[in-house]
Image (cartoon, rainbow, N blue to C red; front, side, top):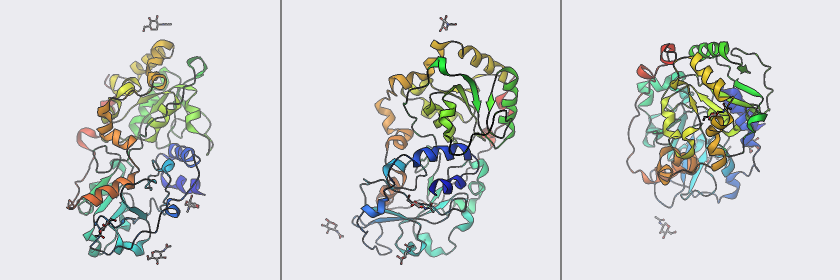
Length: 380
Ligand SMILES: *[C@@H]1O[C@H](CO)[C@@H](O)[C@H](O)[C@H]1NC(C)=O
Ligand SMILES: *[C@@H]1O[C@H](CO)[C@@H](O)[C@H](O)[C@H]1NC(C)=O
Ligand SMILES: *[C@@H]1O[C@H](CO)[C@@H](O)[C@H](O)[C@H]1NC(C)=O
Ligand SMILES: *[C@@H]1O[C@H](CO)[C@@H](O)[C@H](O)[C@H]1NC(C)=O
């Protein structure tokens, strides 16, 4: 039931997300947070940010037309993120019940469902949070000044947003399939055939074996729903993690799945990924398309690497040695996301503290130097 609901949530990167969800949703008991908590004190509008009262966060919109399902246990808080966890230091509640708007300390709107935003100005006295995990390229609200002006906080993939919630989760340390048992060379799985990445992949295919399971340049049977993507990836030496746009901080769950699976991701996307890959043994864990002038050069390198176990395994050092993060990592934006509490607990903590609500967010165009062009990726 739940799995099915979330299957509908994300259209663009459906397969990956579904499998990720499947994995996370099957993780643990489904203890609903609210049952365990004492009923929050009723809070009068206006006294919302007093220390003793419970902070109520109202998720106002649907997500792609689906009602948000609030879950609570810590195991699930990373995704779909509609959770507080069990040990939030401030009293905090998350609801989708619009009748409680008078009690709410903040209102959350999904960035792809802004047509459902409240129209009455009476709700403007509390901060609004713009939440979305999609690329700004495909989220037109980001471009709309009138819409963005209504918001005080951003909860997106951007590591510099008020509440970063990147789909690049902390990868798992599970041991990789040994080199000799990785029978596949490289794998691609995506179904939104954005031009540039598809052309790039097409050219790569001239020089090396790429098994494509998604709708784009498909040459392998579709992976059945419910089948774990990372176990398929695990048998390959390389996973092409090519998101559909090059916007700052836009990183999908593919990169997380590829790393977790014990394969080596080949990344064609924003350079801001370096903010994550700068830490500890993740430094040499991802191959970046940016470092190669052409698909031919990349294919040559991957082919060479696939034949040299010593060199290849250097990319998996983090799996064997652990992350070995320095202490500065813990205060970095990604450190806070990977190690910090559940998203809505952090929202509550901020709302409880922030007396002055900033007005208006900037538009995020993801154009100019960030726009994806073939020339940027193929330079020969
Ligand atoms: C929401 O989650 C609860 C708890 O897991 C589950 O029982 C319920 O069926 C879910 N609702 C929907 C609409 O998926
Ligand atoms: C808040 O709680 C503390 C301790 O529980 C209590 O001493 C204090 O009077 C309360 N303040 C208000 C405004 O209710
Ligand atoms: C929504 O909130 C109102 C007001 O607190 C309450 O009367 C109602 O039962 C709630 N609805 C649901 C479905 O919980
Ligand atoms: C693998 O690469 C190393 C250099 O790092 C080299 O010394 C070694 O001979 C190579 N092994 C094979 C089998 O090519």
